[in-house]
Amino acid sequence: MITVREYTDDDFENLLEFCRIESQEDHPSSVNMWIEKWESDCRTLPFILKFTERFKGNNGKFFIVYSDNRIIGCSGIYKSEYTNKLFIAGSRTWLAREFRNKQLLKNEILPVQKDWAITEKANIIALCFNEYNSSAIRLFRIGMKTGNRTPRHLFYSNYNEVEFPVIIQFTAQWVIYETLSNYRFDWNKIRSPSLQLLDTTKD
Picture (cartoon, helix red, strand yellow):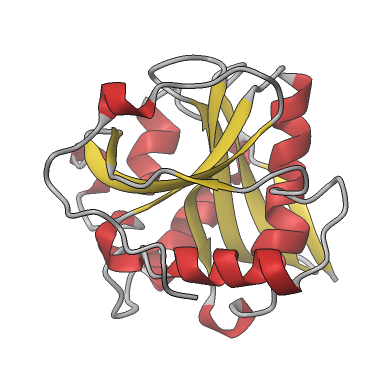
């Protein structure tokens, strides 16, 4: 049985071990899961959970994904550093290899994060992608045409793409998002000059 539960400090050691194991995978972002000296590397997930406020209190929430009582993944959501009207979902998402391609992000993780964002009066909920995984945007685009969504799903009301990269957490990111109100964020204010325009014509 798959469940998504809110992370607490009591979960840290078990999640740390999960991060250590998963960091051994040959994947561009595995280095951000764990390194031996994670306490001194602000890029790692354990450092963020232990020493920052990104996923704490009203700033954000972090969630652990379980298969029965086994940790199989994790993901967070937080209020953007630019405005508390913009929420960044799917942050630091990781799933164990055998649980990928099962639509757990769509059907289990993001709905829980969307619920929290709505209670916190979010105006925009966004997903961000680094250059190496920006091809995943194509999957979301296809999914909007072929997949079924209910109000609990992200992108139920609308689906939008920022056509240029922006700076999120000091990194150039591609962004897709759902608006929950008439509020509009000026993405040009945080535009990054470091990447080329994303080709949105391919399906």
